[in-house]
Amino acid sequence: MTDETPVETAAGAEAETDSLEWTPDVERVLAAIDDHVLGQRQASEQLLAAYMAGGHALLEGIPGIGKTLLARSFAASLGLDFRRVQFTPDLMPADVLGTNVYDREKGAFRWMQGPIFTQILMADEINRTPPKTQAALLEGMQEGQVSLDGERHGLDPSFFVVATQNPLEFEGTYPLPEAQLDRFLLRIEMSLPSEDHELELYRRALEPEVDRRPGGLPDPVLTADVAARLRDASREVRVAEDLLDYLRRLAVAVRESPHLELTVSPRGALALLEVARSFAILDGRAFVIPDDFKRGLQPCWGHRLILGAEAELEGHSSRRILQDLADSVEVPK
Image (cartoon, rainbow, N blue to C red; front, side, top):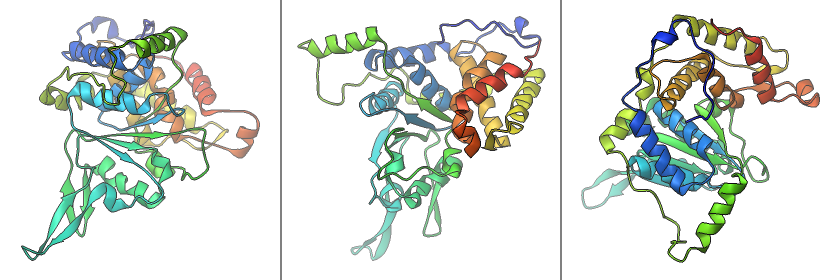
C-alpha cells in the first residue's frame, strides 16, 4: 500500500466508497513478501499489480539486490508453481518451450514440456540470450499458448512471466526489441533498501537460527484457486467515463512530445488502464482515481518510449518527460 493518501478524485468518485473482496488477500501477500524481501515494498506492489492486471513484469536492478528472491517469494506466497530459467547465449527456444522426442518403444514422437509450462516463470537475465530465444516467449506471453511443429499447446491460465535484467551491464547482452518490451506490462526498477532495512538485513544474517541456504521462502497465504482468480482481479474495478478521457489525453500528450521517436500505442494505453485498476485494489478501492494513472505512468510507459538522439544529448529522460506531461494534463474535477 502507498503511504500517500491520494487527494485527487474523479467526478462522482466521492460516492464510491465500497472496497473489493481482495483487500485482505492483497495485504497478506504483501506482508508475507515483506518478511523475506526487506526494503522492496514498492517493487512488491508493482509486481502484484502486474499480476492482478493479467500482464507480465520485467525486474530491473543491480546484481545482488534481490530480484530472484522477490520473484520466488512472490510465487511462494501465492502458492503457485514456479520455475526459473537462466538465460544464456547458448539457450535455445526448445530449452524454454519443450520439444518432440522420439519414443522407440511406442514408435512415435512424445511431447516433452519445457519450463514455460508453469504458473510463474522467472526468465533470469533475459537480455543475455539471443533474440531467437527471447522471441520464443512472445507467443506465450501474448496468446497464452506456444506452437511447435504445427501443434498448439495451451499454458496455465495463471501463466505469469517475471523477467530480470541488469540495467548497467551491456557486454555480452542482447537488448530486448521493442516488440518484446511491449509485452511486459510493467518494468519495475528495484532500488537499494533504506538504511534501516539494510541494517535489519545485516542483523538477520548474524542470527544463529537463520537458514543461510537459498530457499528460505514464505509459506503460501492464499489457496491456488484464490491466487488464480486474483490474476484477473483488476477487471472488477470501475472506471468513470471522465477518467477514460483523462487516459486518452495523457496518451495524446505523450504522442505529441517533440522529444520522442517512439511513443505510446493504443495497447500501451490499455496497459495503463489495467495497471491503474490494479493500483486501486492495492489501496482498497473498487474505483479508479487520477492518482492511479499517475502512479503507473513510469513503470508502464517508461520502457515503451524511445527518445530522439537530440533529446538524449539535451539530457532528457523518459521519467522526466512523463512527469512533465502528467503535470500538464488537466485532471478531471
